[in-house]
Length: 120
Image 1 (cartoon, rainbow, N blue to C red):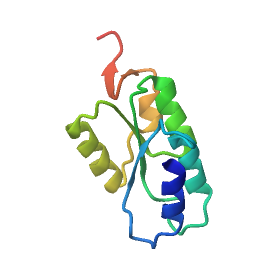
Image 2 (cartoon, rainbow, N blue to C red):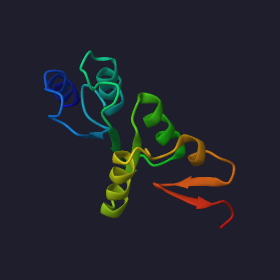
Image 3 (cartoon, rainbow, N blue to C red):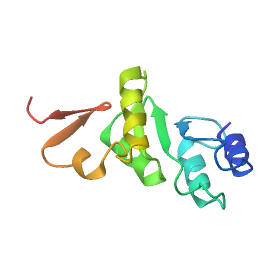
């Protein structure tokens, strides 16, 4: 599925897609591999199209893996629509979620897709 989408994206015209919601766990080519392939492609928007990881994997290492693969954000399943909407709005406004610096700062810890103060 991811491999087919990656090829479809490569052949698309700029503007056909505004954003990609990438399922991480797919057969043949997973979402991380598909994201890396998109980012390496010669498509005009390959480096800039927002890609959001959609996965049940919600540990901080999973979020870090998504960001390292080239995704702009990570939303845990089951997807809470308010979280997804906020993530999309942030990316569209140029904010990008999650922010690597604030997400992994000493002041915050990651629990699923929410950041909460340590020791709270």
